[in-house]
Length: 112
Length: 115
Image: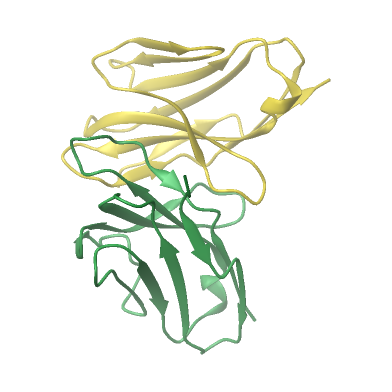
């Protein structure tokens, strides 16, 4: 069964620090890798996404690093702010499908 | 503009009852998804519609779950003979036609509690 494994489960970072969340997948049948941010009581919102032909993508303070050979991708949040405190999910879309597999989530807390 | 809306926001029902959850996608979005999110977990894919037809219903857990989208806009997720294990937040998402954009826009979800 296709899976996306996410770590850590929770993360505490000081304001201004770097938050790093990692995901790994088990097969190569994925062609799109988005990251979502979810606040309590809200639906997930797309933060940034990458395709497997790119090794890195940066948007503002958010960067995705993608290692195709290792089947791993990570989210880096630079200059983390208390407002970034939320749950983050990685996801992967099955090639040729519109089916997304989500990781189990990382609860980030940024201390003021 | 208006985002994805879901009603009701909360639903409490007794075991064995039938429930309907509604999703209003963003206007013009032809793709619609249903997910189930259990506490402390990521969203779990249930079904994907392209227009009126269910293009992929492989995530529906069993035949108690059914979803429709008769006019290609509003969708209803129907759960028969509810069980306590069905308790979760049910999320709906919509996106543009495949090829025009992959971003899914999620609604706030319906929290279903089966007592």
